[in-house]
Image 1 (cartoon, protein in one colour):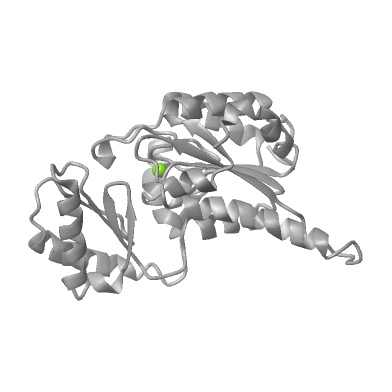
Image 2 (cartoon, rainbow, N blue to C red; image 1 turned 30 degrees about the horizontal axis):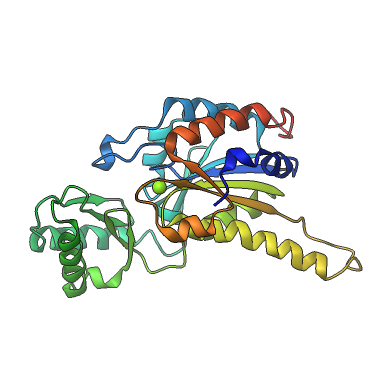
Amino acid sequence: MPYLFDHLDAIRQVLTLLPFGLITDVDGTISEIASCPEEARVSPICREQLATLTKRLELVAAISGRPALDAKEMIGVGGMVYVGNHGLEQWHDGVLQFFEGVKEYTSKVTAALDELMGSLTVEGISFENKGVALSVHYRRSLDRESARKCILEKIAASSIARDFRIQEGKMVVELRPPVEANKGTAVEALVKSYNLRGGIYVGDDISDVDAFSAMHQEASGQALRQAQGERNRYRPASFKGLAVGVISEETPQQLEKEADFTLKGVADVERFLTWLAGAAPTSTRPHP
Ligand SMILES: [Mg+2]
């Protein structure tokens, strides 16, 4: 996969497509993975550069598996849009909004948590109540593979947990409301509502692959519109998005395959955001 710093011209080119948006994942991208989620800290360099970028770009957003309010607390940059729970909720400007049909899952999450805490007694696992979703982490288990198997078995056997959709990430099994919301649908919604013509998405995990596809789908939508010819008087604004994969030892192969460019770990993301803050045009935002 092409290393991003060998292809800065391609980044410069997409940066000219205004309005431009930067969308980033959180854990493993702007924050090193910690042995438990509460211990993770956003890199101060990333935070500083994101703050600069909010003044230069139409949109700077974070999309996380964490609840939107957690992501906001963790990053703490004003002016950013925080999408939480892989697209189930969004925080912006003091308002938290839920994806349709999702809010009522809060009580089911509590019930599923109670049940699974009683039945799952594997060493090293921990539960995280995320409001409208529930995560079961097994990073601290000595035998991770058998912990994972046991978690999946108990979920399958639970009448409450079975109502949820199961999604796996790095050393985590997550129970989510069965709605069509993921990082990809979140990216699509952001592109549309901010009327973006160019964008970059940075992420490191399997759930980011949906976002990568969304960046590329919008691009093929553009090709399609162009192929439809010039006769249409009204042509919707085209969009070109680049997907940047943050590579570590735990990176799923599919992510590397779908990425346009790669970066090596959080340290490279720091370097990239610093470069981007310097390269971004200073007057792309119509209002301060
Ligand atoms: Mg991540």
